[in-house]
Amino acid sequence: MSKIYIVGAGPGAISYLTVRARDVLALAEVLIYDALVDRGLLNLVPRDCALVNVGKRGGQPSMLQAEIDLLLVEYAQTGKVVVRLKSGDPFIFGRVTAELDALMAAGYEYEVVPGLSTALVAPLLAGIPLTDPVLSRGFAVVTAHLPDDLDWDALARMPTVVILMGARQLDQVVAQLLKHNRPANTPIAIIRWAGTPQQQIWVSDLAQVIAETAGLELSPAVIIVGQVVRLRTYLTSGMSNSVIENASNSTFLAGKTVLVTRASGQASEFSELLRSHGAKVLELPTLEIVPPSSWDDLDRAINHITDFDWLILTSTNGVDAFFARLQQAGKDSRALAGVKIAVVGQKTAKSLQQHGIKPDFIPPDFIADALVANFPESPAGQRILFPRVETGGREVLVKELTDLGAIVVEVAGYQSRCPDSINPTGLNSLQQQEIDIITFASSKTVKHFCQLIGTSLPSGWQDQLCIASIGPQTSATCRELLGKVDIEATEYTLPGLVAALELGVAIN
Image 1 (tube, rainbow, N blue to C red):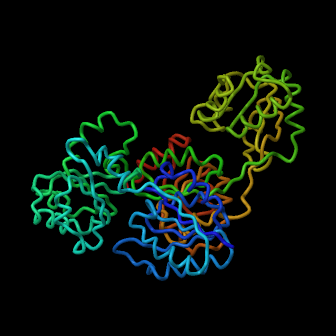
Image 2: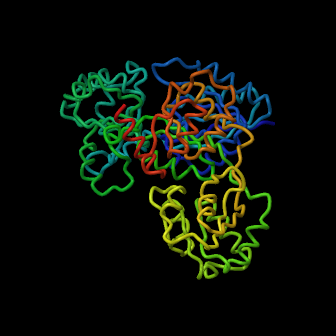
Image 3: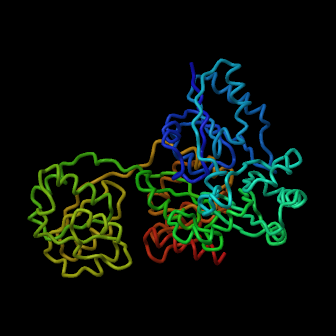
């Protein structure tokens, strides 16, 4: 019989997801998720997983709870692994009872996977303890979705009150607390998008908070009322894990959804860099890095490595392939003692240094074209080994070195190919016009992206978003296949691309 998983997504960021939740998401064949769930979590499900967005966002159209209950049962009947992903913890204002009732009535087994509730995480990341031996010996957690149903007299007497779903009813919350004799100078903190790079925090008191937040978008937020809010300034002075306060004031990428098209194994570092600048990130891999059709040429070159004067490595893929085969041949970096090494880009240099080797030459501008023009010695007569992508790589480097008299031996170190299918999460977000920026780090990513999307997007879709390129060659391919490029990095690296995005978004 099919088993259904009810999973807590936590406050948002993947880093606060439980290990069990991650394991269950990897099994999902059907994912039914709420609007507040971080879209980055959708990258954790298998590529062929069916994605069902059921909304559940205050003040916006969403499915009725009874419709969601029925949907769960209908998908359970298919025999597939169904995961119901809910923000926070399913048992804290998650309306989970109705869903479990429906599953039990239909005879289906289920497992509930806990998640970190924003009621606990938001105060912690803001540096506000919910309990304190002097200021707060207990706290209450309520939802202000229906403020008239709450016992305000009891809440006003609690030392600390945590209020979920109350941002749109803030005026009523404050009015009720004051009406029930809570002092006007009682501190209040409002934490929006807790646990994400978009987190914002406002601290005030009951007398002034309405005026100080007038006209601001506060939802979704966690509200904390109590003297413990005063501890925040002291406690955050030494916190290293607190999320940046008011991130939208410190980076122009805050709140922007960026689509990353790098290979799945290479996207994480770039994605984390974007998240650190406040962006929401989705990944749509357009490259797969796989072994070449044969290792023979590279292995033969490694067996005669002392015959070469230079080794040129233009990517981390080339570094990884070369040293993997070097180890396979029973050799290590000492075999390169008489060979000088040139690399393209600081990231390639860093990858090389992980093998204990510092490159002899890194061309300026971090592009292969600059390598020949700035080569530290005459290429004439130099024997050069160049492990590279098997097909589709740029030919200009080899041609120019050969024209200058170098003897260049090209060997296949890896192959980059187009994935067999497109990531449905990224495609769905493109179709729903939820993407603000799409990034391309090579011409191949542009070509494969166009191959993958085919005719699944309407004409002119690219006019609704920003297309960002890592450098001139990639930009040329963007113009050829997509008709435009909006932002181009001036330093042709991933950090350079992020810097260009920051500047470009700020100007626009």
